[in-house]
Image (cartoon, rainbow, N blue to C red; front, side, top):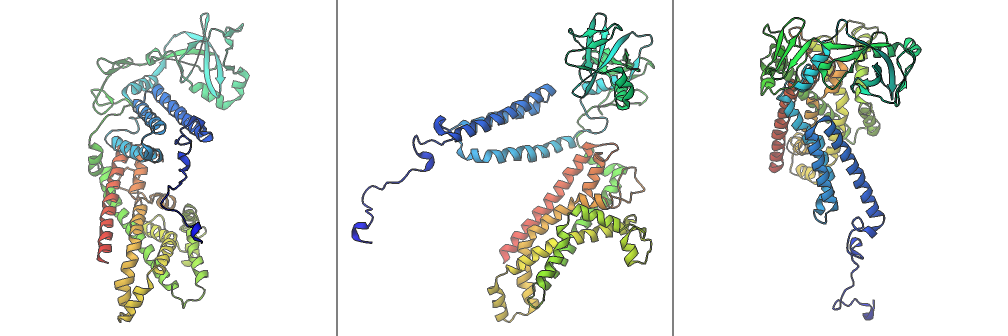
Amino acid sequence: MSRQDTIDLTGPIDVEPPLGERGTGESHARRWTGGWGFVAKLTLMALVNAAGVALGWSAYVEGSWGILLGAVAILVVTNWVYFSRRALPLKYLLPGLLFLLVFQLFTIVYTGVVAFTNYGTGHNSTQEQAVDAALIQSERRVEGSETYPLTVVERLGTVGFAIVDGDEVRVGTAESPLAAAPDASVDDAGRASDVPGWDVVAYQRLLEDQALQEEVLELRVPVSDDAEDGSIRTREGTTGAIYLSTLEWDPDAQTMTDTATGVVYRANDDGQFSSDDGETLPVGWRVGVGFENFTRAITDTDYSGPLLRITAWTFSFAILTVATSFLVGLVLALVFNDARVRGRNVLRTLFILPYAFPAFLSALLWQGMLNPNADYGLINDWFFFGAYIPWLTDPWLAKLSIILVNLWLSFPYWFLICTGALQSLPDDVLEAAKIDGAGTWRTWRTIIMPLLLISTTPLLIASFAFNFNNFAIIYLLTGGGPRFPDTSAPLGHTDILISMIYQISGVAGGRADYGLASALSIIVFVIIGTISGLAFRRTRRLEEVL
């Protein structure tokens, strides 16, 4: 480079402005003349606002004021962030924060709220909805009540009734009370023959369609918004009659009176209507119960005994699964990390194969192979000479089977982790130990194992937390069985806490108790959080020592 070609650092330096600062100095997403950037921003914000308005309107219609308030707040914040010149970091952080709020914090808070209520079978709604449900369930046809010419109508898969009441045609469905259809036509038989917006179902089709017949017989069309006005029902599809409830609701006295028997049911603090004799109506409503769900878990004989056994088994299952799979994976990693072993790559691939199969499919295959009947179970047929060994129906053998199957599924993971950790150990440290005269066992105990634990302890904690809630292996292999004989709750010897919560929640059928299930979920959350916190603290101390 000649002297004339050198850069003159004493003069002004022409620096090209950043891409977003050229022209007016504004981002393309903010300027009307910014082209596609501004159009894309407007399009995305229009979609976000449309979805927010739709959610807010649905919440308003359903009376969910909390969701409505949350939707409005999120829309206001989102529009302010993306149309403001300030809060630049929030433009990148806001999507993640919203997902965290909706999918994590909301779930945790809602679980906490449910844990302090009696939410479950028979207590799914508000008192107003429970009153309507009770009135509907006790409906009976009034003796000698008037009947109406009726036509079955259909719209977008929804079946309804069109009745002729005097000179007026009224139409409605199970969700919509009867309303006037002024443009409807009536045939010579006095029934509605054409209802605008509805398809009239031919009587011949009603006779031929068994499923439609059952739907029509079950259909109840409210006469009005007031459940006490009764509903229209039909027995043959051509005439309808008014069915009225045998219960009378007195909102001032908070009582339900059975007009047939004269029994008075009063609203109590448990969210039920109960009589003086202790009889209760089958429909209740949600109320706060304080810490009752937490105390019931440890005092109710149906749950307290199983809870202790299931908690002990849950810890045993999680600890044994992590310990055995880690040790087997570590031993195999040490063996196949030795350069003297021939065909290491092929053998490593074979050991990883169980990890490559879907876990749920492997569990189902193992369930079939562990069938006690040797005609179906390969294990008893091939390895135990056709003996009848109840691997999945005996309490102790079922637990052993779960641990062995989970070991088969888990050790390849730890084999991979330990192999990678061993190969990443610093050679200079190992060489220095060798020069200082440390033997194989001393090197392993004071250098290799501590370094290995530093890199694998967070994964061990995560594996413990995963197996503490490893619902799939329990559900697919034993379904929690065999059942406990000393409780009416649907719980078994191999249930862990998460499968116990599943059984109590009623998702699998039976009586649901979401309040108790939520309380148990909080207990599990506290246990996992405490153990994880202590373990991570121990890991940091180990790092400080080394």
